[in-house]
Image 1 (cartoon, rainbow, N blue to C red):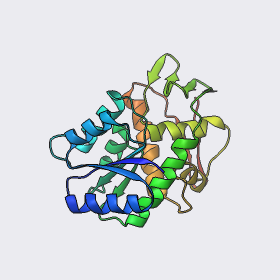
Image 2: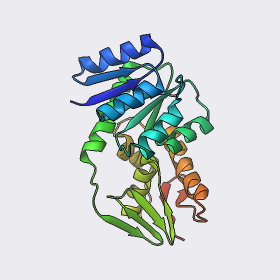
Image 3: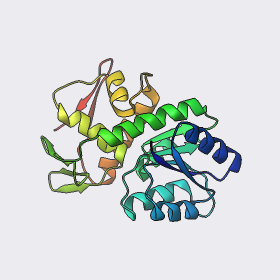
Length: 226
């Protein structure tokens, strides 16, 4: 199965998560704070990270940024948070998280998210270039260019943009996009809306005037290339 790094300052939650994942065949490393978690990630690169947002010494957002930008790791990150506000979810995506779970959560739901992200990570094509209008996505470099501007998107916004750019004339239903991204049968409309907002914000923060996603109310989303 997979090597999973669990970073959670509540030892009871951490032990429950590790025990549950190990029962499902995964190997787990556990850290009770951000610095120890980063040291474990350096020592042996995890295939997936379960990351608490509120950590001592190095919080989850800082940890995720360092994991992506300093260690250059692309392993999926599921962020655990007690915060359910849109801005908190956007901050998680901006930092490089792939998914989030709001506490309290069911371990069965965590298992579904873990399995879906591992399938996506193992099956994702990392080569090739997608060009759609002014947008150029280099899958191997994990980078996006819009005209002369280069963007570094967090993993989930990049995945959303890839899906839309592969079929730039297609209108994707919310259900189809959510299942393609999270690999679940359940429709996750709130998570998808958050991800769309995070992708738009990433373009704006990079200085692009292009809003890359067009919303067609009652139908879904498609790529905007003008």
